[in-house]
Amino acid sequence: MTVRTSKKTVTFAHPFTLGDFEEVLQPGTYTVETDEERLDGVSFEAYRRVQTLFHLPATPGTPGLSQTLTVDPDDLEAALARDAASGAGLTPRGGCD
Image 1: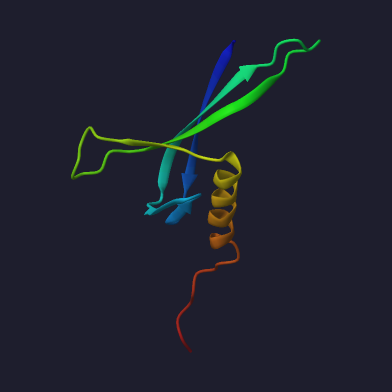
Image 2: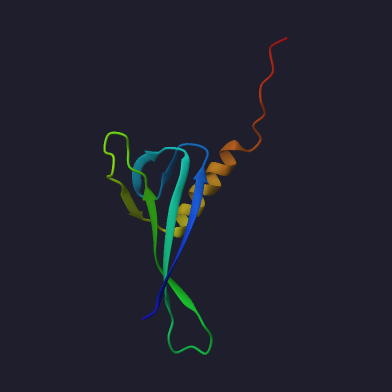
């Protein structure tokens, strides 16, 4: 079985939740890793996603101790969409007349 791993970063501008993880996560940039395994027996190169990992940074109270969540990619996309929508249509307020 051949496995490939891709890595990307995602950035949230607002506090957010992710899937079944109950903790509200802080805005920031997070690393996401996706593992895919090659499908054998097909006439073209194809891969199937087997897991998506979302890396949480260490907190000031526990330096060096970080967490990694296994997440559903659809939950991650939904969280990113909610984050983008929460900033849409906002304009700075001017002074009162």
